[in-house]
Image 1 (spheres, rainbow, N blue to C red):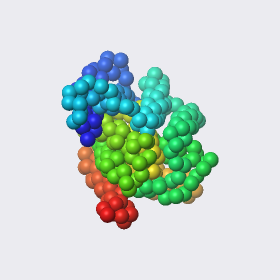
Image 2: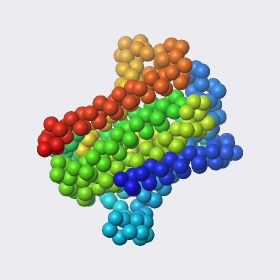
Image 3: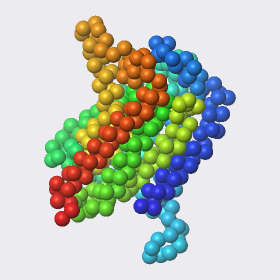
Image 4: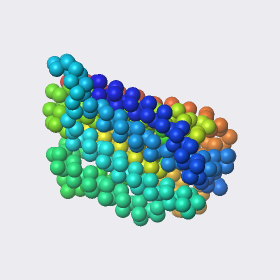
Length: 354
């Protein structure tokens, strides 16, 4: 419990205190956001500093690392030491940093080219394939099961197709959060809700060794995964302080790619793969709207929405940006609450309270 609190508190404080310096640094170097001309009502955001996801990553990483410094224990009293890092936690951090690097390169090219076009699709997919391959290899080295899970393993073994599943999960989650990142505070706030849910679930798994199995809760490091989730919860909340409307800093692809990838990585290791669809229901809604729009236009020549992603559709209907964000927060909260309910319901149905 204490490492979780330390990770969240350190990440939150660093994010909220370091962001103003990051804003000044980026402004001096003219690292600003380029707004698509077809997005009405966002011209005032042109030039707002971007790539703020670097702050999220640095704050979360610092919180994660400092949470492993032990200064007191019930048995030894006050004693400075280092807690052991688990393979599961390091694997999630590696996936987050890898996908964050892809997003960073994308943002950097947008800034240097002075237009809203960064890495091409092939380069992004190639990078995501590499990250997924390394993640699958690391998971295999840790002995992680290649089965798909919902609230826990479903017994469906993918075998040699597991790396493909890892790629689909990482890429889908990273791109979904990236699509959602179009309004002030929307991606950061919804991400905080999802990471808060993962923190609760990972800690619950850690505390219920008998039900979830000793390997899942200890050797892989469910407690460590809870610390990682807590660090990103704190970092995204601290960033949200400055990213809320009117945003003074955008996270950019470096933030959205990393946050989405982190969610998928946590789900893959904890065997809550399919539960992520419920927890991240807002991201599913946003992505589904984009897919529907593309399919409808290409095959029928008509648009279902005035503009996709769907949050821009509501803007064109006359909704105020803050109204959309708050209502989407409600939808995100419903998805998280439902996901936690299903997770706990599986625990009860499986005899966890006996």
